[in-house]
Image 1 (cartoon, rainbow, N blue to C red):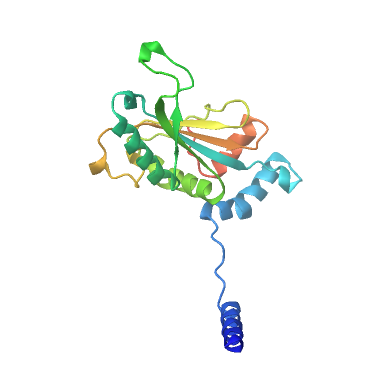
Image 2 (image 1 turned 180 degrees about the horizontal axis):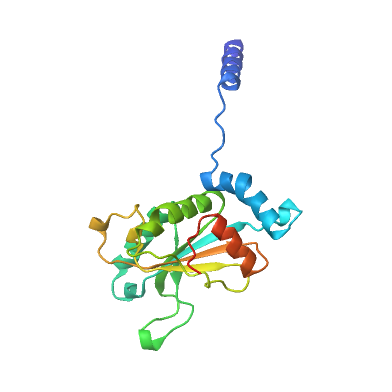
Length: 204
């Protein structure tokens, strides 16, 4: 009996080894950065060390839902909608301090956010540049001045319906979305050069 089990295990191991191995998933935009953008950017900025070439480190998506104070369902909807856009489960943000004017108490849920890294980060950027932004009505590009002085760029989207993952027939309230793209660039000039090569449509 034990011998049969050994033979069965050996056969299964052999079949597994003989089976074709699937290549790990690599985002299209990530591959484009490695093969095209990084060498071109290194040449443009005069960088000889490949590891010193600016890259995107993470993308943070944030959706504020102040109305959730009166209607908790709005926050639940926002979490589902942001998850659809990001492809990753977001977290709920709570107020850090009380603001009597807006009837906000410390610890009260007021929004949702998600941090994207690696391939999911590149996939989101790909969809943002090639699909979502071109769907903005009367689109004339995005501001090239929304950098923070440390190589990070923030973009405010007034209507999240530009993302095809959102079914407008199921949306009760149109929400805005803030996108922050964090890079390893040492200054805004290098960061802008990086994002432009990714296809970010700056108008200035």
